[in-house]
Length: 148
Image (spheres, rainbow, N blue to C red):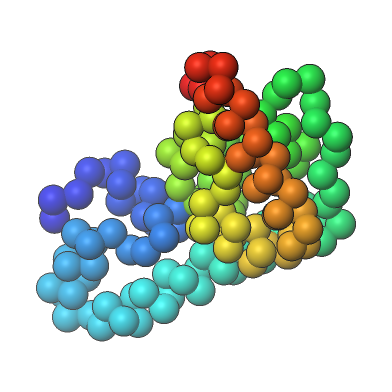
């Protein structure tokens, strides 16, 4: 198939924005409709996010005051009681983005992350505040030359 086993696993977890091209091609070669595959993949991601949002009571979550220089998203993730990988799989977002975000290598939340949080039921004010704090953190650490 031409796809690393780890990529197949992560695809099965729903962490990529779309089904990987190599997997789509393989599924298509078996005679399946890839449009249906794409719809099912998106529905799976949405359902994972909704279930996780219900479990963590996303609609009730509030952003605490900044904590002792910790990355705002790291503090948020820990408040939810999740490791990076469990967050990634539970909210169907790519773990590499979380890694970059928490090392101040990404400037704010990605569109995939914002969409995942919205589908999970986090209030727009929480998403916007977290996005702002992450961008501010990244800017500050870049200005010091301490990003990552």
